[in-house]
Image (cartoon, rainbow, N blue to C red; front, side):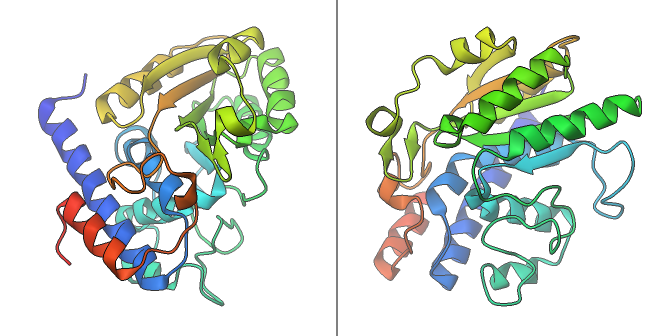
Length: 276
């Protein structure tokens, strides 16, 4: 059970990451704010509360693994990794720049601590399943967490992986859907309605858990529930808001990858309680 004090610590850390994200993306005039803001609590709770990881030994056997399958949201991943100590915070300023080790989508070859290179949507769940089955062969207790986006689950590869994960009883695989209801060109309902996503995964033999993706305690409890599964993979459907915390970004597909101008920067910082 998460204490009130710990919940406050994590929520305050998330608020700082939101401010840092706006600072970073405004300064470099590129990047993906909307999807990064929607997954803030998810990524932060995993890195600072749930995952068994060691930045000083990033390849240690038996570690938990996180896959940012919706790779465009990597700015939030990098903020967490820098805070955790995988690389100096100063490196964040090089995001999406030539020769930087912080690519615009996660790159396992360039960034220590990134478990899988992602960007083309639909890859992460299948690769995560492979990692999960590998850990089972080694009798490891490691969990594999795969963060998916709403547009991404329209990809056929997701459902092929879902079938296989159920067949092989990959109970150490935890998919997390950043369910903000918006993708690159519009809402899910406009682009490709998915109906009941939970019912679909349940029909494929998955353990389905729902939570508030912007409440660290709610998400933490969902992870705990997923780890209790003894014969099924789990999906946490985390209800979120694209652009969470910045009013003019919230729920807007236009903020999938739009640069932040000076006036927008000032308004965003004011709403997040940060100093300009």
